[in-house]
Length: 211
Image: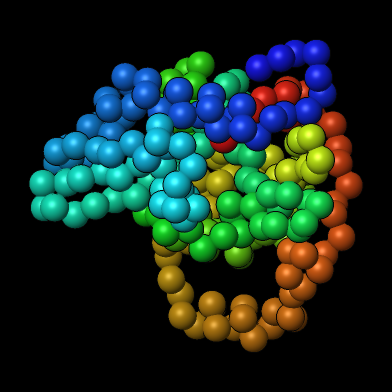
């Protein structure tokens, strides 16, 4: 990508992401994660398609003939936090991927320089997001990625915090959950809330292209 401009081109990010999907290490990653895998289908390399509208970048096929759907987020730099996108396009107020009901089983967040991948169960990540969204937005740095005509917004949450929240999200306490719901006042949607102020962070994820 060019270095003389101060915005990210979404199409270039997608092209870069598709190239990274073909890295040989991805096969090793999924064979380690799923020992009974017999193969995979890379939907990202085919360009924008209806299946990708649902967040599916890769389909894992297991020996049981079960299919797992993966959304891959790739960072060209390494950080100690995840960029959780909650507004995709602030000009038309379209939701980011954390706010979408994606048809995926796992989100694979890769830091390409280290070839390190965090494989997160999607339903648990979304449950953690729903429970902690307000806290994370008020606690951790929010960032906006400039594109040609709009900005993409996200919050940079430490990896350790997200992983701990996912682990807690898998523990279901019906009484406590019911009490929390009863005490929780109605919350405005992501589109009704004002955009949070930005703050500066060393090594911002916005120096990067996460796609």
